[in-house]
Length: 348
Image (cartoon, rainbow, N blue to C red; front, side):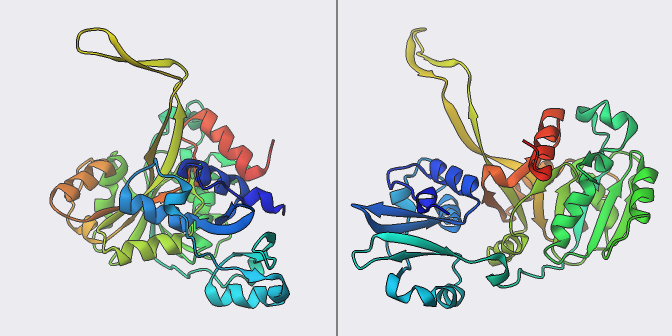
């Protein structure tokens, strides 16, 4: 790996840093000043900044750690041991003048085993998938294939990778097809089907789980994939003592027009040519305390964002776990489904 790929200027924006982290699939970038190692910035540093400040306008120099860990070239043989001891995945090797010579990266087999999460996962798999018509005229949305596997199986596998073994599928539309598929699939996890006899929205179906889930659980829509360490998300949820934690993804949207601001007297007060907007969007994946289910009225249609707002308004703590734009894939519409397929299947 070329060291220059993970270098960033300290006057670069936080958004630019997140884009580089996405592009390189690394967790850390390094900052040089006058040719010498000056600082490091990790995805965790960025997440903590967002949660503390809420601002997307920060510069790298506002967030970076200006006391980065490193080893001199003469000690580079100690790098792997040093990295494991300090729980870091990338370590710059510098010469006596602190110029970066190389960066040692831990291989997957060198990194300690991931969190064995083992909490229930609820997947809202009962929708009609109207935005994906005509695909959903034939198949229910959870069974639409992305490569060799249907989207629901991709989702289950992503959680199973972190030790989740109990899955609850709330099913309605073409539910017998969904059950038939998974009943014939060789698997080492458990699926419980929750029959939704009438459509209850993206949240109402949870009321059907009363007295079945007694711990914190993950709730996911059946048309999204999150590429994130779910163990870290859960630890954050518990550390912050949240009632609900929403996983939110950065989104950058460029407006393809010149945007004008109008003064109250009708004159133009400002113009921006094709501005880019940055904001965090709800991914449709959450960590949820079991009290959410216990407080629900049975059989009442509701969407989960409305449930969140109800609890937030009543004083319950609702937190956000921010992730990068590249960590969220959504197949809610045909063009997004094709993009997901390209990413998962490695197509150009």
